[in-house]
Length: 218
Image (cartoon, rainbow, N blue to C red; front, side, top):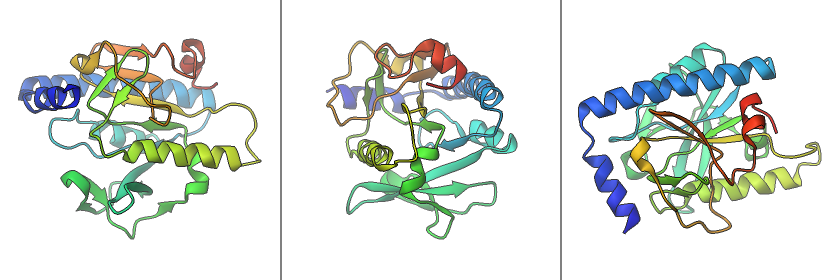
């Protein structure tokens, strides 16, 4: 099974590969975010996550974004409904253990209401396997797929928003996590950009074109 194969591969990542790949990915992502800030002429609103196990360590990336003035939000999971709430993160945020043992902000931290999710500029999406067309395979619980459905509902219902979506969905990955084809259902969240230790891949069926991604806008 594809998911189990890639989960086992990630568990087997050695310290050197983890350290080197994490640093390279953070460097590539930081450069892209700097370009995005420059074009928008303002700090970013980023929905990230706290890595666990041998997921690439993006904590230095989040810290650099915070230092640059960006607003960072991390998820809290609600297992009963397999949904998430988004909470503001900074270097004073306290954590608790959530779903899968992943660290989450405590419940009292500032909440980003769901009707404001469309103000996000970047969504950093975790996953276990990806393809160059933007397909993504998660851990199987569907938290991010439900988040994306709610996001799209909010976008559709927000009469103040005009034109197309401008949010960029990014995944930070080991290069070996990119495979030939990841099966996708219509409701699944895909990605527009893959950032590995080897560089940036602009996804083929991504909603945003390469030229537009380089500008950070649709």
